[in-house]
Image 1 (spheres, rainbow, N blue to C red):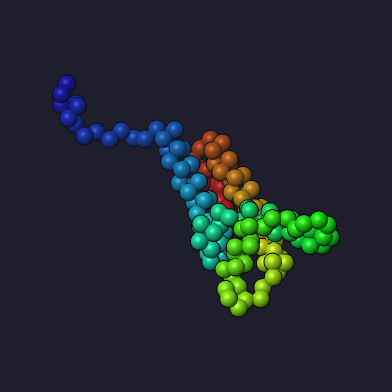
Image 2 (image 1 turned 30 degrees about the vertical axis):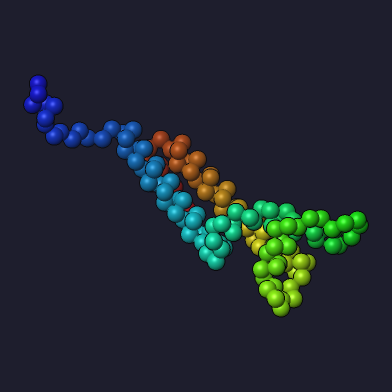
Length: 141
């Protein structure tokens, strides 16, 4: 039986294997389309800066709430304070309130973009529950 072990025989793929391949390919296609849709929003920002967006948004909203009706001390804004130092350099005039408005405006655009995050998740779920490779291929971004 050693000839069988040495033989290069390629068996046809099972229906389950074909379905798994179609699903993997379709999920990659969906993720690529999602990434392409996000690209215009994030292309100018390095990933390391993107990691601070949640904190920037939190600080900006807290400051703007306080700024609208100042009572007590202003909330701490260490991330935005440091960004503002860098943005203004030695001669800049941008205020913390202006920076906060810009941060919130960007955050709202990204919040609206999350509809596409939901769409991506819905389509991936549909792909994973599709029973045939034909059903998988019928799903499109």
